[in-house]
Image 1 (cartoon, rainbow, N blue to C red):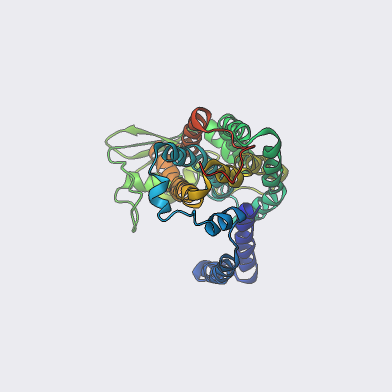
Image 2: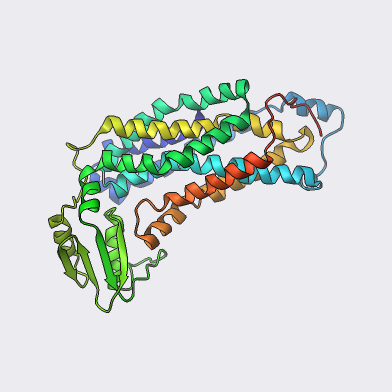
Length: 369
């Protein structure tokens, strides 16, 4: 449960800082306070790590002089163990990580940036949903002791593939129904000759067409692109020629696009239920991971063999999720298209796990082969 506990603590710190500081002060310098507070948590983490004891299995191996002299080399010295490392990376770590990132971080970002909810309100709803969803990690960890690690992992992946897009569409409808209605009734089309969006731009986009795309993306509005000699942005029967932010804002308003989510139209209970559902999907794939990875590898090289794929999976597949998702959204013009990154990684993990991941539930963790 510490997986979601850390995320919940981060929300608590941010909400606390927002409550204690005026909005202008928080935006100017107060946002740095949570990062400073993390230094205190780093000290606690270091203290805990220094106090950890070795497992009984390792202590017995050490007493018998059977520990590995070069565990990294030995982890990859045989194809059998190398194959397990690759399965743990692409079939276990990558899949469960992107589900967790999507359930927690992407849902929060989606509410704030796409649905245009007020940040504190979105954070409060996410925090409550995380509290309600956190027991899933314990429940599914316990259940994996009964039915098996692989079965739950496969089921969680399959359900995620089936429910990911419907859940986020429902989330948009619950958070900002006016925006969802406007995108259906008055779709936006951007026509121009130079619409190349630079995701690395530090001082704004170079062309008017790219600036229009940037504005629409920040408003959480889907759009389609068309080639043309003159930049135009149409929303239903509203048409703006050239890039004029004020005129574009007026045209979108006339077409029914809200500037912000209206709290009176929101469905908080439904938002919480959707995020809880996604958290349970995360628990279904994450709850058994510690046991699964320990049972997957021989004791002699266990720590290194599970550590390499776990941290590569969480660091790269999870770490690149926000960037890749946003890039896909900008390139496609579809505010939901970024979910294809999660869907694709989970689909890969499902195939790899289905074909190559052994069931480990009843395996003796003292084994060394």
